[in-house]
Length: 141
Image (tube, rainbow, N blue to C red):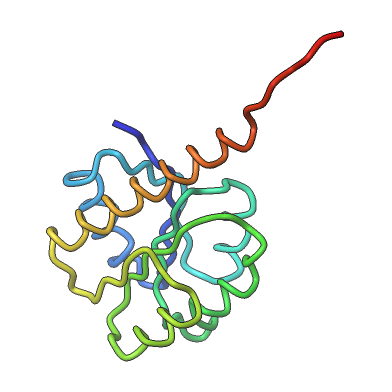
């Protein structure tokens, strides 16, 4: 099964530990390569590690919001799975970001597995598209 690299971004260390544990137990195809608890650290982590997916909290006071992080990293290719305690950001997330999933804490295992499945499918599609673009013919005279 295809493994995907992920970064978890959340200001609450218990939320990071819970998500990391759930991913380890129920979604072994996800390789958590870094966690961050601030916008600044998260930007650096995503620039350095280039994950396929970011699990992103929205409210991270006093550091800002997940939307601030997204604006600072919009030039980088990755998918977003929101992991937040607030459902009232869902419309903004869908309109502004078009996330791969939106999980409201405390999220259920089934919801997490579905979100990760979407991430696996999306990353496979992106890789297949990239392969098509790099294929061609070499003609030698």
